[in-house]
Length: 218
Ligand code: AMP
Image (cartoon, rainbow, N blue to C red; front, side, top):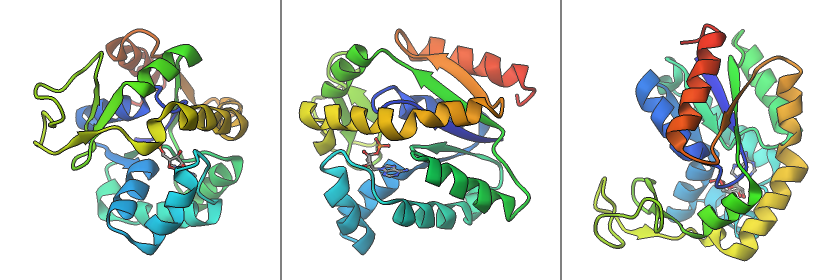
């Protein structure tokens, strides 16, 4: 099963993708996570990406597309995958079609996570992530057992630099301008499966699973 997950920053894409990855044995490909790992390791790609990410802007398509093509050539995607944070522009969506077409492959469904903007701003400002394993927490809704320490791996739990209120506003603007049109792009192909994440992620995942069942994918 080859999936894309679309949604505004802080809509719960990562959490939803993590649940589906474990349940259906999919590779979870998060472009944000790949960029952050590169920034942490001080690679050339990381240095270039950081200047955009810190502003809440998008990393240029050419850089991002090359990185995803490389990731999709690795062995662990054979059983299927969930693309989280990619594509984010129409050009990326078209490039993805071309990359997949080379292997006679295509996307099976596009999960669209819908959340009210006010809820997003609120959630993102209290979001925290593990520096080491990427696990997601929230100081209000899902705190760590020990403050600042990851429940999963014992790593340091921090606030992402781009989760500050000013950057979140820029990221939401970027999302509405560049990424939201992709919902229509994939809707026209009948690929959209919607989940509402205003209330609970369990409810959202249940809606998504109903949609995937209706398409005969699970
Ligand atoms: P995320 O963790 O998905 O919210 O991504 C964090 C940041 O990484 C975004 O705000 C962008 O600056 C950058 N980024 C992630 N994925 C992409 C993409 N597909 N295209 C361009 N920039 C991206």
